[in-house]
Image 1 (spheres, rainbow, N blue to C red):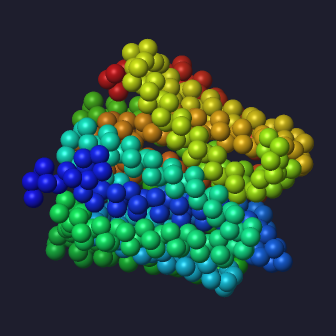
Image 2 (image 1 turned 135 degrees about the vertical axis):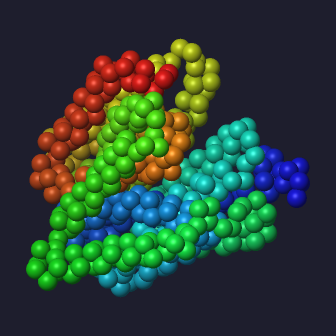
Length: 482
């Protein structure tokens, strides 16, 4: 098939490209739709249709869920590169995600919740990093890539924006399990569209096999490593149960430490490798503040679905005169991000030569991240019954901080990565989200007992970090060669 024949679809892109957009829309709809009401399902009383878990456990589990999903993308990327290939693993991941939402839609209580979260973590870890790879696989040049990834970003945020509104409305009228079933239905449709689109169009553009399959000489070592990791995890869980030391708080700390250790391993491995030149190592060192910016960003931004989701229950639920449901506020972030990103794309295009340098822009983003939690100090001091306007304003401010940091970070990560470790540097960026959410999970009890101090600390750290970025911007810019 010639390139001309291939380019017959949306905006001249490969025919079948919309099926990738549909898959990503469905996955993000199901993820954010389920997460919008997940906390309330866990902490509401049984009379309200919930599980009646302690609030600290509910907040911690929600944050742990996000942390483990981003940690599992490392496994999903490895399975794609070494075993299944991106095209097939997206299908496998979609099946796991669909199964997870179906289980959660069934009224089987805590066992169903735990089984569902496990399936969703596994499935999202497979699908999320690899569906992005598929976008790059169906474009032929930089111009196509710009169009394709722009449309892909729209699909992500459209699913993220619509889902909390739809799922929240269903939960209010019909209960949690009907709301969860909406996520299952949309994911099922997305998976069906992908399978059909792959068979009809995408198989002509995508490599089915893994790009770096496991050699026969490696199989024994790889198998032994995988089995050892599984045994260690199962034994640790069994031991904690038998010794009555298992708790959500303890698990949160283990996950957080694991994310930090993995990050340390990756940085150490790259910086000590003989495959990395001195110039590349200098860029990796300069990348560390960018990684830390990611940790601070995601600790606050992802807190919108956990910490702030709990905090809004204490408000009067009035936003500019309208009564809003708790879960509705989850639509604020994607709404602001879509318009904020479009605005910044225009700014970058028109004022490219007049903008602050990369690290100064990160500093502005960090200042906004910190300011978003400063806005919550006043309602936190009030205690309860405060206006929900504070919540919406806070979520909007952190979304603008995200616009300055997140969209450029993938490109920056790719640009600063040593040639021999491009994929592993991308894994480090995903781990910044895992570390941030792991910290949130570990501090859920502290938040509930010391809400004002919690917001004060979370506001101060990004702002102090922003000051440090401004001071070091010139040196860091020199280190990356700009």
